[in-house]
Amino acid sequence: MSRGMFNFFGRCDYPQPQPAPMYEIKPPPYLPMPMSPNTTTTVTTTAPEVREQPPPSQNELPAVWDLVLQDMAARDKLGQERYGTRLQPHNGRDMLRDALEEALDMVVYLRGAIYERDGK
Image (cartoon, rainbow, N blue to C red; front, side, top):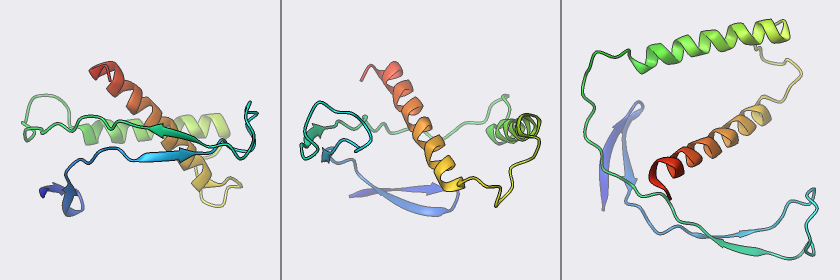
């Protein structure tokens, strides 16, 4: 059974939480590991508890969208000052790689914050 949720893009149905799957992890070839390259390690993960939340209520605080737009303008200015140019396509960098690395960092910070908040 799924619960219906609305998001920015329209209606999405999210499945109920399931037990975390087992993952087989092989160490990347570029990391020195004290095991043979064909060794695998099985890791069991536990997904964070899914909490039902009430609908948002209006208050006197600033809209998060406004805060994000201010943050983006500040990052744009910082980038221009630091690199002498604004971020543009075909600038000699691999934007997908940069975005992936930033997203992975974000996930680590989010998971750490959940652990600090919930203790698990």
